[in-house]
Picture 1 (tube, rainbow, N blue to C red):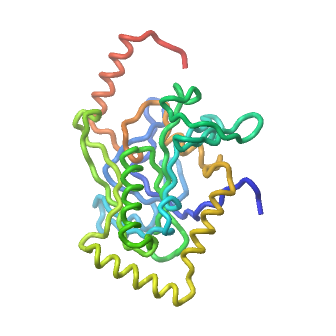
Picture 2: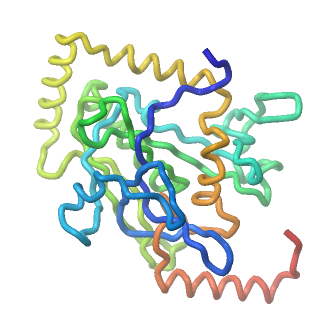
Length: 302
């Protein structure tokens, strides 16, 4: 077995909230107000839509704002991994990954562990692109019991909401998350920092029209049936735990550059779970702030 390579859940598609567009010679993320399910194949116009995207929409032109899903693992920390992450913008490799207490950092002498001071207090992160970065793997559809769709996000609202929901649902259900019928739902809110313009984040809820008691009963029935058939969920969780621990970093170089392009762009982006359509209000505010900064500060290289 290859050493130093993290074994991560098989990915058969992506869940995004936007796309990357070319504007003024730069490729930048464009925000949106709906989910899009894509394959892992790109062409010149972006990622190719996954067949399930059309199925879930139901009708042409309908906005996809909720997705029925199931989680792959009972352990919330296996379903979603969230860290402060700094990528090498040239190679796409992770340079430093931390949790606010300790971090693993790639140095000339190899991978070493240091104190993680978070982006605000870290000299390495000053003026760079170290951000909270989360990856959620979920099952969509029933065709592949181990294949997952991955939702990547640098949005604090999304990371905090998803981690809290999984922790609460795990406590309420006795830890049978992988059997629960759930739903990813896109929510919007306005904040002072967004100047009343909507920002969108991802929530994890019970499926529409289903009560907690109904969902738990369904999950327990399914888990009992799986156990009788010899399906060992605890062993799956342990195999995943060992797989994640095998590598210094979860993300690999092949994925790094597209991740940087979409989630760690050169220009500052508003707090959103992923990229999507920028509305006129946000564009106007950004232009005003940029013009004011140019008047107040001397130009600097790089």
